[in-house]
Image (cartoon, rainbow, N blue to C red; front, side, top):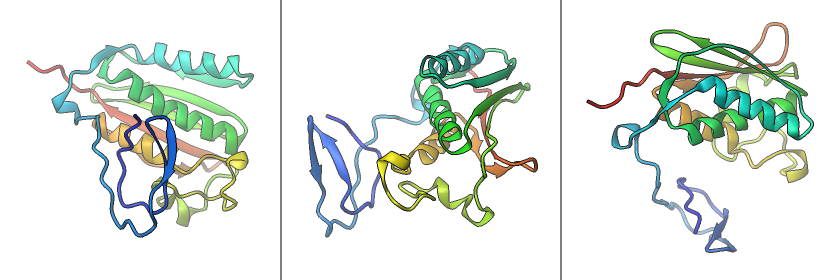
Amino acid sequence: MTVVPLCAFHGVRLAAAGAARVLPRQTSSLVFPCNWPPPRQRAGAILDVLALLQAVVDDAADSGHEVALSGQAQQLLAWPSELRRAVVNLVENARRYGGAASIVLTDSPARVLIDICDDGPGIPEDQLARVMEPFYRLESSRSRATGGVGMGLSIAADIAARHGGELVLSNRPEGGLRAPVATARLTPPA
């Protein structure tokens, strides 16, 4: 069974126990238990961030897409599968809407910054915060052929927050979008 950790959505299609079903429109609020406890309740793993990012770049290359990667970082305590999902979501968005993606990794004593950039049209300034909302899409056709369902950015932001960081989108002066995922250097529990 798939558990969806979201609430307050009407007419949402869910896959549950292998079958799709539509929730009734009159449902005003739904709470699905989240199987992802906060970081303080779960042990992370020592992660080689550069190796994780290189795997994302390699997977993109296997699909015929070029993604540039530069920078270095020391290992950090993180949740590898969640961090990978955030990066993959952002790289796929950069490729889909910006044509190409580049990742720059920057290390500091307090945090690791994973900066995903593209050369596309960017996002209108008045929409930068709104695109982080679940199910919101700039492209209005709602066609899966022209994009996702509007969950990638909100998932990536949630993952960054769970790593003690944040995701704040901005338009680059030279064009395109910048999606920096800042993660805090968490210390292992004593």
